[in-house]
Length: 195
Image 1 (cartoon, one colour):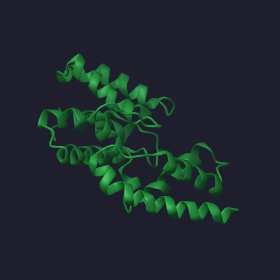
Image 2 (cartoon, rainbow, N blue to C red; image 1 turned 45 degrees about the horizontal axis):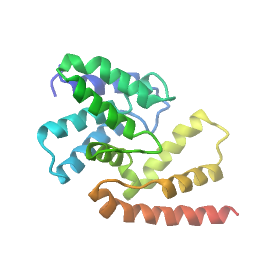
Image 3 (cartoon, one colour; image 1 turned 45 degrees about the vertical axis):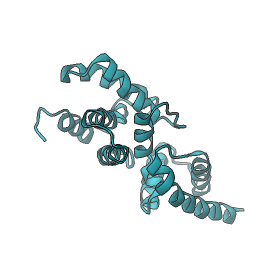
Image 4 (cartoon, helix red, strand yellow; image 1 turned 90 degrees about the horizontal axis):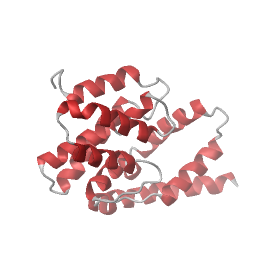
């Protein structure tokens, strides 16, 4: 990665400027979403130019956290819109990238394959054996903002989220969804034990 490279520049900024209390939405998460986006895009046989657009959207999807948690997707899109023209991205490409960034907003709403890919890449961990690890990182992040958050409330948040979430890509539906269902069963049992 050259120092003039957009991925190098933005990732370095994320490492330096994201708040330290972002245990989940950190620079490593962005790197992971880029990797998962490429993986899913290749599964869909997309072209190198399409994959590059998806990678750039993944790179920027949480950059707005530098400016604050609230409406961070909108802030991410503003950053991308301001910075991408210097890398020769057209207005149409930037609009596509912003569409993908907005597809990561919870609850996710997608309208094309690119948005399906980035939405699934962003929450890929829900359908993996790393669920507990990433879920715990998210809990610590939320607990920092809401110190009164109890374990019971956290279990309920996870339960509601897993019930309402669905994967969009073929890989997500076939491979990740069944694993996610196992996590949902486990969280459902945990919730029952609170009663």
